[in-house]
Image (tube, one colour):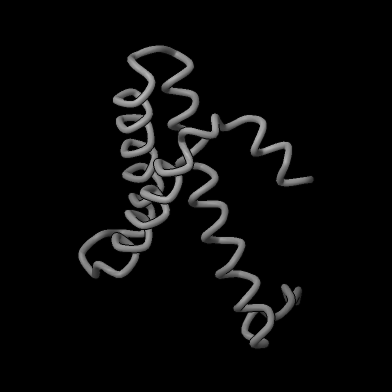
Length: 96
């Protein structure tokens, strides 16, 4: 998939929202008391709230916020898993 496809889905004025979602996710990941499973929900809520503040309350704003949160989480995982694989930690799934 091409990143231009993703860029076409998320409105350009929400680039800052995407960056904030990424930063919030990173900070929460570094916080020991925050369980990993909850980070995606927190990032999504931040994305939706910020998109609604910038674009107004509408279904499109909610969708845009969810997309910003999802791309932030996906981007973080993409970098994390690539680094893990490059360092040899990623390993293959071994079946016994």
